[in-house]
Length: 104
Image (cartoon, rainbow, N blue to C red):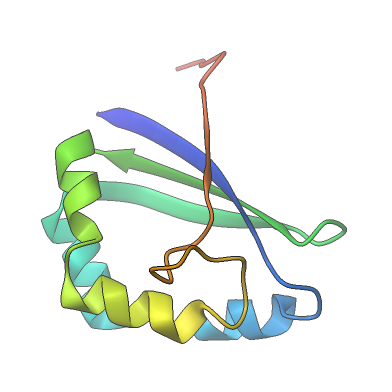
């Protein structure tokens, strides 16, 4: 299992709406994530900085990248783009983090 962590940024004033749109997350998006080997996916909010810390355990980087090719993921990105910093394709601007310590 690969541990993956990354940061994303919300636009100011959108914390409540971001949480609302994830409660619950679309069932079809949950299925796409599971079908692409994603486990134990969590997103945490730093409310003072509008920053999101995401952590997921994934089966492979290739499967993770293929999520972006799905219709459900593209639709989710379009649905969320007004709340967060995004790239030209509506994907969230994400900064990958490198693991420097792990205790099991």
